[in-house]
Image (tube, rainbow, N blue to C red; front, side, top):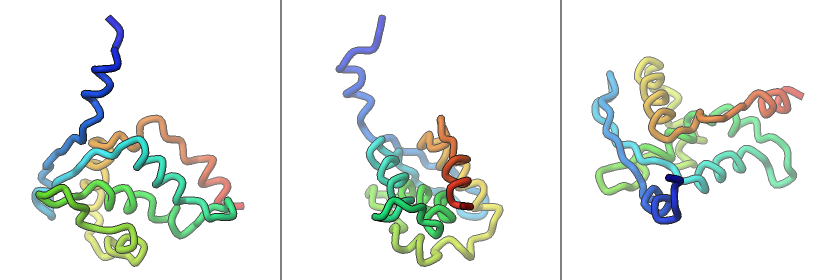
Length: 123
């Protein structure tokens, strides 16, 4: 039996996960909506349509910032925090575990091919 509209509607609620990240402890993650992921991708371009290299360089941090929330579901790290280097001094071991957990939970890597974006940024 194929999926129906009601099943799609049930899937539209936000999901949460509480992975224990070595070196950080328990981190609450929220899923991202299709719109939120689209907004993150769109933020990689300037108003003139050019690649924003600074934002592209922080793409993982932007996704992590959007997904990490407190117990009330409020983002812990803002987009502005990320761009000001909030995660820059974090130990790379816990960072690798955190980004992997976020990508698994949000599905960010599913079907993503950033090679064309990266190639355009080099030109």
